[in-house]
Image (tube, rainbow over the protein chains, first blue to last red):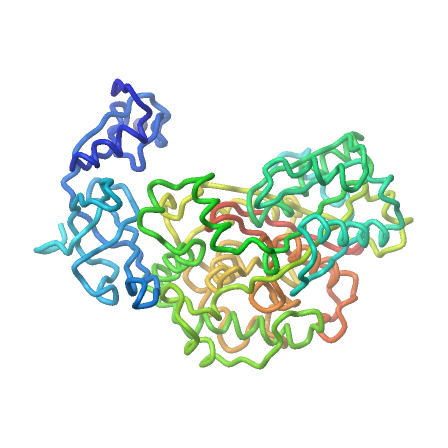
Length: 129
Length: 392
Ligand SMILES: [Zn+2]
């Protein structure tokens, strides 16, 4: 169990602000957890600790949000399954939104958005695991 | 299924329904739209507001909403339920209301809702910004999904990928709703619309165009519940509650284990078990169609077809007038109207079909109806099965 001086939401964001992407793993059932929680949603144990994922994942579902060009243009929103078995929402960058397709292999990157750390993804090199 | 729940089957009836100010009705507040519908529902039941001693209501804006509603209507309820599950709430209110009526905690429950969403003086961009501050989703909002459409778009994209569902099949849902709306003089959008019109409409969040998305309208809806023995002697033909089930597995679309399977699997199973029925027994279905993918997901999750076969199920006008299963006979959220939370209007249309009041859109000989409500972003689900006296 991780000792916290803040709630996990702030703790997670502070790590992200410092360039570090972490998820949780349950010390009881060993399953990974995202988003950060106080109690394991799989087994109920109070045994969640931070771990660094490999950062590789696969696009599970995808949409292009349409936006006027003068407001910045269209952008991707994806649900991504990390290889550790957790799902999260993010944006795949460096690829035309229309080319972000389900099954695409992607790699996590911590960037800055509005001066806060934000988790984004790029297309990964190589094949699916 | 608990025998105590099975024993509730048919124990409560809907004795009055009301709708007020539906469409575009500037100059009315949420409360005034609610009250207009409530007056009509209570009068239909042959009651006065002073006879109402149970209340169920919810608002997307006011977290303590039962209090101002009680105050405005001038009632002193002994049963109060303000459960807020989004658009499914007013179907989810059925079960606690039934239990309260059966226990004798109260004798007449008013379920009511109103929204000036379309005509509100506060613009929707401001409202959505305020909601993001008051109710943050820190793991989704940084990516600026256009909520709710993008959440449903993500589900649709996965459904298309896994099952080969096509945009044309999604468009079939919108066109069927429009064809029903053309038979309903109270529907908001009755203009002719083809599959191509849906496909070529402005894309909002791929694969959903503006025609795959529900309308934004104003409106109030209400219904009155009483014990079945009392309903027999009231002015309207009673509509009995045969089954109800509610389920919620998540709030965020990113927390869904499988974005093509909703908690409707559980709400539907519970409602059918309580009613002692199967999908084959249902003659008309009102399924909360905030987006075209909803109708397909709910047909599957309720068991009208297998998972993945919803696209084929709706093809070739199968849920349109004259099709194999009449779905969303008022025109639905897609074409009748969608005042913020639509669930109560799905239930009211089911009641009107069972009473045989639907004019050109009336489905002949309807004895059983299903009304299904959805809330959040495929988050909460509530299913009701209703029937006439012949189904008791
Ligand atoms: Zn665990």
